Length: 462
Image 1 (cartoon, rainbow, N blue to C red):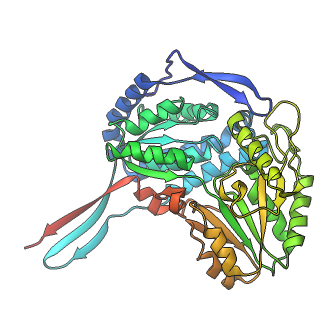
Image 2 (image 1 turned 90 degrees about the vertical axis):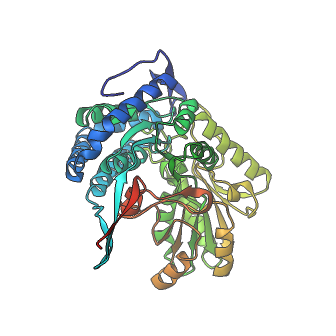
Image 3 (image 1 turned 180 degrees about the vertical axis):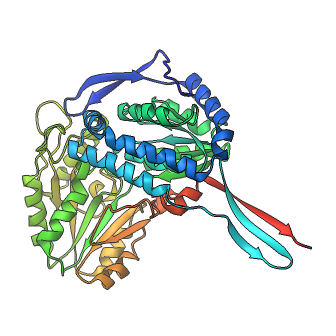
């Protein structure tokens, strides 16, 4: 906080999910520390907002450079606390650094609405003030950098709170930020749910960016309403993939498997429901089951590991319960489904068929390594079933007919619809959810403007 390390006398235990045991402790902030951080951010705001975009961009670019230089150490710590394979931790840090550089290349010019003999009207964008950023445990570095860089580049100061399950890499990120940015511009506080609740209610915070579950997102929105905070919510999804009958099954199966099971399925925009045309249904089921059976599950520090553990006991228990409920309902398990013995929160990639549309597995966001494959004969029926959900984060269509694929994708009720790909994002493309999957967008000029207040300046010339 305010450029200095601080202690509160309270601590969080951090569990290695591959072992199911505590391996580290970190300081836990409370309301007093939050008040100090908010005061520091407010003090730093006037000078920070006065800096030109180019100066703020240069500091973000320096951050990206240091992240890449220290990538190895950060990635190992990220794998220890999050569980994902080391290669995926490296990729997460590299992705965050690259997208950070991309965002600060976006210009936000003054927009001239009218200029004639009678009037000159401009639309300007000014920073909001202090932005509170609350991040989840599935991708703590990348999902912190997106909103953090958006806030800083647009002239805001920030308070960053990581998940209590994965605070360590974010605190290391805080040390790097402290090397680069003036005191008070960025403040990093670890803490539990009560700290997040205090942030959403704090009168000194002007905007909240929250990434997490729909249930918690609704609480954030309700709390923020009391002080009319600006809010960006990137929430959960139940993301469908529609596979048409003209695909090359083997090729598509590899891509769909990765998009479903990367980070053991703990990705907001991972594929969570697969709708396969009846002509290729059996072949796709067999190909995905083959991919699942040969995937290596293990400790993320093992270079051979492709899928790590679930990140925490709560999520592990939820997915185990989902597997057990699905078995009781009489579904067919083509791969996985067993609960391995031993320490750690490990589950194998699990492929399920013969599951009802109204089952928990189809209706809920599983956020774990289990995916249902559902058969369809008519595209209209597939679209109806794919859209029959309160979620609307993303979806994809898989076909050799690109025009038809784009037409079908455009009818998915989601924030992002892909054709022959899934999970592809960019600093220049807005990302966010429809329906209950979110509010607002991150990234792109659209996302950056959500960290600023639009202001019209209207001048009468006579």
